[in-house]
Image (tube, rainbow, N blue to C red; front, side):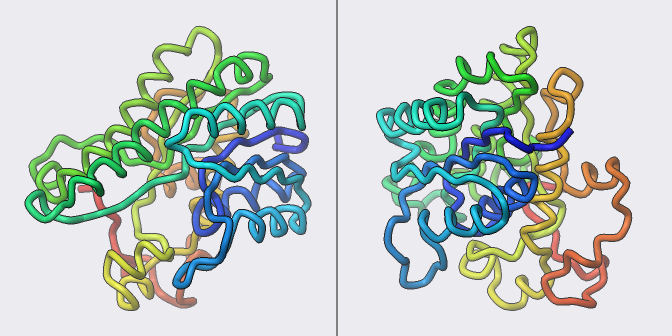
Length: 276
């Protein structure tokens, strides 16, 4: 299977991992619908919904940028309707939009707590829910959420409780949808990396240049997501997948090309959170 002619609806995607996934799909000739709110350049972050759309087209895909917020039900409905009207349906939903704040409980602002729950958990639920009628008509429908396997160890429950709750909420929504719609052949899986990925979040929140240098590029996430999205939906669903495991199962044994700093050995990579 390929993603040629398939339509992927993604939350976010103006930069980073989401954009890398969109570009990988675009290389097959996929249609990418981006529901994102970055309309103007950010002073510290590269990319807008418009530059992302241009990059998708340059990579060989078709792009439909929908300016909106994953927290807004009307924006979600507009993105789904636009995808169906422009491309005739939806084959995959990628829940990429996510807010991160690693503050300890007493330091976490209530507004930031609410934002994480609204974007990460509610956004995943509502975007997936809105797309289900279109996914029912697809030949190989997938929901893919960029969230971790759920671990109830105190190490992760207590590390940053607000953020942990938000990311685990994404995973619970996804696994719940997998169970609910298994009979209809709609796959739903989560995907998470073993190592940190060189993105703005890592640069600004997880350790700066030191951790960036020990990270892998977003392309490793994108290649793994691609393998999931082209897999038979009825055979791969309800799983908490790890990026490297997916690629190994696809025959990739050498990850050296994904090093953010060429030549960095696998043993020096910085482990991502939520994995023991």
